[in-house]
Each structure stands twice: as C-alpha cells, then as structure tokens.
Length: 326
Ligand SMILES: Nc1ncnc2c1ncn2[C@@H]1O[C@H](COP(=O)(O)OP(=O)(O)O)[C@@H](O)[C@H]1O
Ligand SMILES: N[C@@H](CCOP(=O)(O)O)C(=O)O
Image (tube, rainbow, N blue to C red; front, side):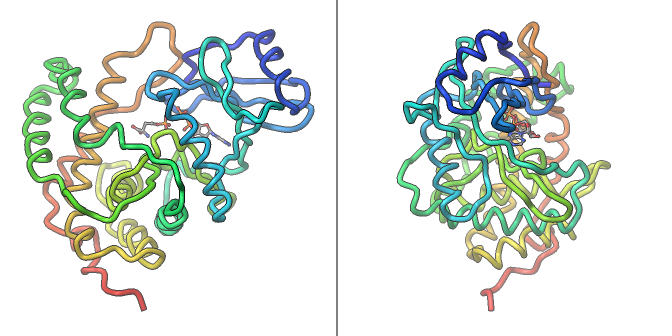
C-alpha cells in the first residue's frame, strides 16, 4: 500500500471543481507502488488515476514527466495521458502535495512474468527509446552513478543491520562502478523504472506502460539493464537466460544494440542493481510514521548484484553477440 498523504472527500471535491470530469463516485488508495500516493478515482465521467507526488519526485520535474507521457502517445506508445484542468494545466495541488489526474489504463501487471512477457517488454522498451528521440525537454538522471555515493553515505553503517557485511560490500561495488562507469554510449529518454508492476497486459498483449516518474536522459543500454534485473530472475533468485534472450532479442530487433552497448551491459546491470538496492535500503530504513507502504526487499537486489558481478559478457545472458538485424 502506498498512501503517504490522505485526501479528505471535501478536499477532493474542491480539487475536481477545476476539472471537467464529473462528480466523484468513489476514490480508493492503491495498494501498490512505493514512491507516491495513488488513488483510483471513479467519477460520473469514468475512471481515473489520481497521484499525489511525494519525496522522490521534484515538482520542477513534473512538466517533463507529464509532457513525456503526452509526447510518447503521439508516437504510438500506450501510456496514461494527463487530464487537463479547465485552465489547461495538468498539474495541480491537493492536500499540500503536487497532484495530477491521469487516465486509467486497463490491464494487469504480470506477477509471474513469462518469456512472452519479456519479449514484449524488450520490444516496447526499444520503441519507447525511439519515440523519445524528438522529445524536446531534458531531464538529467537524478539517480545515476553520481547519486549513488550520497545514498550509500545516507545509509552508512545501518546497512549492516540489514545484512552483516553489507556496508563494505556496497563500498567496494561503488568504488568499482565509479572507476569504470561508461563515459559514452547511445542515449536519450529512458523510462528508468520499467519493472513488471509498471507494465500492463490484457490477456497476452502488452496494453500499456505506466509510472514515468523516474524517466530521464541516460544510456539506452542502462534501461535495458534495469529490465534484465527486473524481469529475468526467478522467485528462487535464479537468472533465466531464456527470458533474457527473449528480452534482448526483441529489443535488438526494434533498436539494434551496438557492440559497445552489448559489451557494457554487465557493468550497466551491476549499476542498475546497485541503484535499486540503495533506494530500497534508504526506504527500508526510513519508513515514515503512519505511512501505508510496504517497502520493497533490498536483499533481492543484493542477490541480483552478486549475480551481475559474476557475468563475463552477454553470452551469460543467453545470447551470442547480437549481430546486425536482417
Ligand atoms: N494510469 C494507470 N492506470 C492503471 N493502473 C495504474 C495507473 N497508474 C498506476 N497504476 C497502478 O498503480 C500501481 C502503483 O502505481 P505506480 O505509479 O507504480 O506507483 P508509484 O507512484 O509509487 O511509483 C501500479 O503498479 C498499477 O497497478
Ligand atoms: N521499482 C522500484 C521502486 C519504485 O517502484 P514504484 O512501484 O513506486 O514505481 C523498485 O522495485 O525498487
């Protein structure tokens, strides 16, 4: 459950006066997600999603996120569209937080992703990267390699209360990544959080991408690495090369991964694992009093990072070097 900010019915009714989406019939806090306060909103005009943006979303970044969703839709990417108030604005303020209403997408996120899901996500990610090439707004990745040491220092010795020895493990990994992080790879707009809970399916068809609140400019292959970690491990923590091959192959057919991107993938996957390990650690150690949220397990990403540390090359992802696309 992620509701950090409660919304009183009177506040909501007043907020909705600025919109042309009918009268409230019901609104309920959403049990999923950990970053923002989300409500499923039913009005006499239909179903919507109301999001109150919390600590990790900077208000100045919201025009980028909301503008990106609008831009991607013009390129055929199915994603939520921000609802404009009568004054044309997509961003408002509710219960003391920046807030927006976006349309509700039908679909279910896969709790047990299969190989077909991984192929669909690989293709969708490549299409998203291509669609973002002419998006005019820019946003630096606030959670790239330069942000990881401050997160590590914020956690400090408390890391060892989560797992003995974790502090030194994190420090060694951070030193390595800062020393070897790639300087130059193809980049552009990336989603940066395309986990299964942010990809909706209707039956076996991918029906929508959601949660663009970490979207930014960074290496395309880094976004691929995030998906390798998020989609290609089994509940018993084993890496599934069939899923990885499906995801990488589908991506490559839409947007060819260069040899340099393929060579960098294992290191990028280590960085992607460390990034989510650090934010999960911070959240795990700092659950706000009274917040209705179930923090995600940092140790899941310790295991994923240890796997990625042992990867020697893309062959360990089940693919030979991906050649030119026919
Ligand atoms: N526009 C939408 N349409 C349908 N479901 C949505 C939409 N946005 C979010 N959800 C649902 O709410 C959950 C939490 O949303 P998400 O944006 O991931 O949370 P957070 O704001 O914490 O990142 C998602 O996993 C999904 O199930
Ligand atoms: N996907 C991240 C945390 C952010 O999750 P969200 O559902 O709030 O977008 C993770 O799994 O650590």
